[in-house]
Image 1 (cartoon, rainbow, N blue to C red):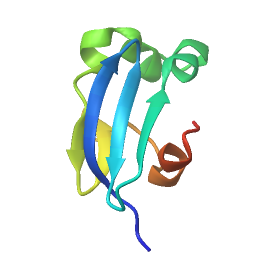
Image 2 (tube, rainbow, N blue to C red):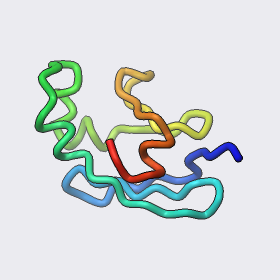
Image 3 (tube, rainbow, N blue to C red):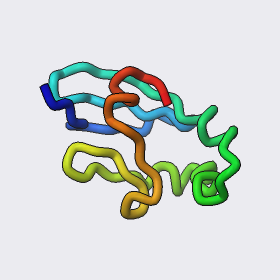
Length: 80
C-alpha cells in the first residue's frame, strides 16, 4: 500500500498533525530536529512563520519548493 499525506495542520510549537491516505492520524514534533540542525537552510525554519508555510504536493509535505521535506514513511511512524 502506498501511503500519502491527505491533510497537514499546524498545531503550534513546531508540531504538525498529519492525516494519511489510510486514515491514520499522527502529530509529529519537528522542534528537536530543527533545534539540533547545523544546516543554515534548515535553521531558518525555526522562524515559526517560515515553518508554517508548508504545503502538500502530490501527497508529500514540502517547504519552499522542496527546500525542506521528509520521507512520508518517517512521518507516518512519527519519527524524524
